[in-house]
Length: 457
Ligand SMILES: C=C(O[C@@H]1C=C(C(=O)O)C=C[C@H]1O)C(=O)O
Image 1 (cartoon, rainbow, N blue to C red):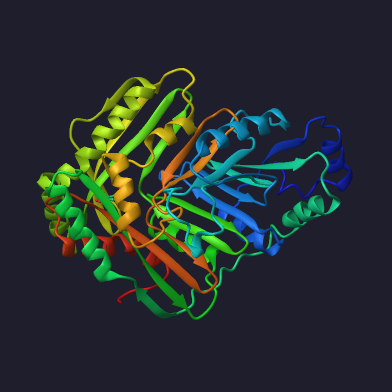
Image 2: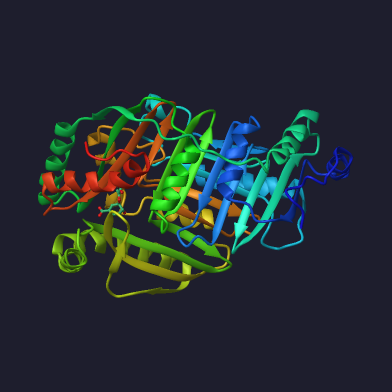
């Protein structure tokens, strides 16, 4: 065990890099346990412009990525999933990997946009339809053990190595996230327009055009000062311990959230997915909470919304898996601010089924798009008064063995300087009531709002 690579001299680094006859070199070492957030914080201190944070909903795996040695960017609808997969394979072929553990090594981390056919708005200009990075420095914390993986081009610039070294020299500094600045303004955008869209969708469902469409909206918040991603992550980690925590930051813009929804996870041939749709707030007392939960478990409208998701995920998993296991009825998933109908799915994947092909097949499920998928997407494109960008889309990681996990990036927002843009949506079916759907989006904004310290509006 070493403390964060401090022992390595410049000559030793040079020796590792220069002996590689591939384009990239990656090596991993165990280090003493470090708070992943402190590591994330160090990136800024050392002047790296790209960083990401990921921890899964069971807190089994946390990744912090700093810098970017390799980037995959795809714009447009054509083959964005296949391109990410091919480019990742190409990268692995061109890299010498020194790692003493099978579970440690470089990963590819990134996300997709919800709908590449939607015209990109100004705020999402810097987020492509697929952006994935292999970080220069990766911290992996798995089951209480920490590993650092450094990945560099074999022709690394002198400065790059110095910067990585510098990162480790800061590593013992205490970390002080800045306090969150007070809210100065909030903008509830297009409430009337959104409610009108919900009404239109309800009418068209009743006419039999489609069965379910998810409509989302955004709210904008301006603060007195710059928002500190570290402070926000620290609060999300404390307030939403059962969620996927994610942040992807490039050049001062950060997409961040705490999502309860797994899209898919692959571990060897075992695949996991979840159906999550149908929602109600948490009760103020234990009794009220139970009553609300029981109501949700029996409410026809919510069960129908949920069933569309179950049917689609079941069908997709059955195509990709030899066997699947899915419970016959939903259970409750209780998060801090909201409870959902929840049905987990497990499958044994067919040969040659990759994680990225599962992501492609599953996105968007009717929990975020609708049923049937294509008509729902066209309706969202035409009626929804916003560009979702990376909201409601897959975000996650893949390792060199093809294992990895993607969450659905909901309960999320985009941070830029003093501003936060938050997103929330809900499934609309024939029996939906526009005013209640609007209230539901308010509940779904709560996780990000509480993390931002915004209480009553
Ligand atoms: C669309 C969101 O959430 C999705 C929609 C749900 C619903 O309609 O009940 C529940 C969980 C999520 O799949 C969101 O949080 O923004």
